[in-house]
Amino acid sequence: MASGFFALLDDIAAIMDDVAVMSKIAAKKTAGILGDDLAVNAEKASGFISSRELPILWAIAKGSFVNKLIILPIAFLLSAFFPTAIKIILVLGGLFLAYEGAEKIYEFFFPHQHSKHEILNQAFTEEKILTFEKEKIKSAIVTDFILSVEIVIIALGTVIEETLSSQIMVVSIIAIIATVGVYGIVALIVRMDELGYKLIAMSTKERSFSKTIGNVLVQALPKVIKSLAVIGTIALLLVAGGIFVHNIAFLHHLLPQIPSILKEFCIGLIIGLLVLGIVNVFKKIIGKK
Image (cartoon, rainbow, N blue to C red):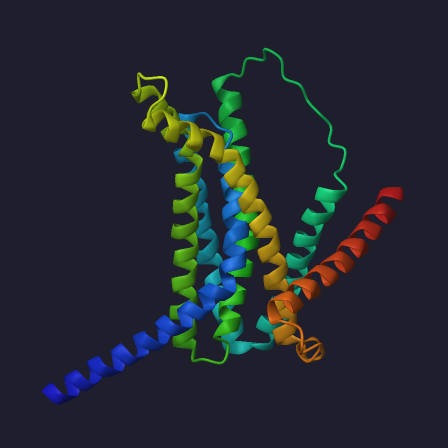
């Protein structure tokens, strides 16, 4: 009886070790999306008054959990009964990621003319402020849904050959880490300037360590968000390129002498630009009609 019990514990430990290893691999594969998710949510959660930043971020995080509760069962059902669909969705997701990355680069070099709206001495009622917050939260949750689909499918793609129980454990772990980790870091980022202002207010001297650190934190917030956007764009193209290279045989065997990271980035960028061109052509055709 005792030996059987310890054998069972040993089997459980072995399974958990395998899950830990697979989760680590899946986390590496989804790191690019998490970087973009982090940049997007940091941007969407900033710009509010200090007292509303965390409540709004909490509302978005709850929406993210609901998104994953919807996505995970559908993904596992597809994996169990139609596994080919996972690879199809994976490649389609790669096209979307490549397009998104290429669009950001195109926007940087050829910025669109955005209409400017000046708001001068406009008083906002509490009702208008709440409506604006709800719209921002809704927009953030919709964006999170798209990114969550990509995260779940990429994570599932790394363990598609494993048993369904292993898939459920690994992908669920990644989904939890993606939500808790991303929104936890976003909360720290959006409160950087608030902490900086508090450190500045604490010091009575013109030059002090706390005031210096406070100024650094206040000035660093917009730079951190911009840096995350750049890192997220590069990561998007790398992840997209990796999806194409590992799931399309022709691309997998193309130019084997080139370092894999450079190959994946270039393929992601080239395909992204092609998709961007096609999308822009369709937009012009639809615009004319």
